[in-house]
Amino acid sequence: MENSHLFLRKIFTDKNLADEIFERSQYLEIQKRQSIINQGDYIKVIPFVITGKIKVSRQDESGKEVMLYSILPGETCAMTLASGLRHQESAVYAETEVDTQLFAIPLTDFEELLVSYPKLNDFIVKTFHIRFEELIKVVDSVTFKTIEFRLINLLKKLQTRNYVVKATHQELADQLATAREVVSRLLKQLEKDKKIINHRGYIEIIDLM
Image 1 (cartoon, helix red, strand yellow):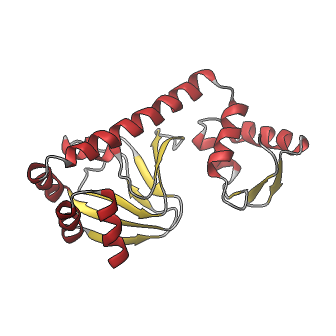
Image 2 (image 1 turned 60 degrees about the vertical axis):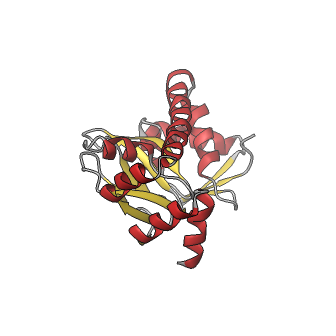
């Protein structure tokens, strides 16, 4: 917990603000692939990721999913901020991609801190700017790039330091908003081209340059 407190002080240059967030927040350890926010939920807390990674997506009625962006250590969710501060239902779904530690500060406390610490708005603006750029990339990818190009980029993004992607063909298809059969066919071709090796339950990256 002490290290987490120091981590907050690195995010926020105003130590008093960091201390207030620490005091008002609940520290949580959440296992991978656990839901954080569902579409249609009203926002009650604002998360600040300490370690781990949270995936933010949109889902349709059939469950098909399009990944929007990931929340990394030192960051929070722009869509959660937008929905929370406007007191509207969440437009996104968020779940942990790996085991994750975070601080969850109640929305009412966060709103109070916005009044007491106007510079907190700088953090919000920076968050929106980062996410806006990422969403532009998503739109460009969906609009202008081929499925194969998008799949390769997704594999690069998801690969671990050991050059492994732990995801099923269906999970990859959901993130690309396409059919599992399409992804499976493309992965077979990438394996044939000696760019990857398909294993049961994971993909080994060989050369995706």
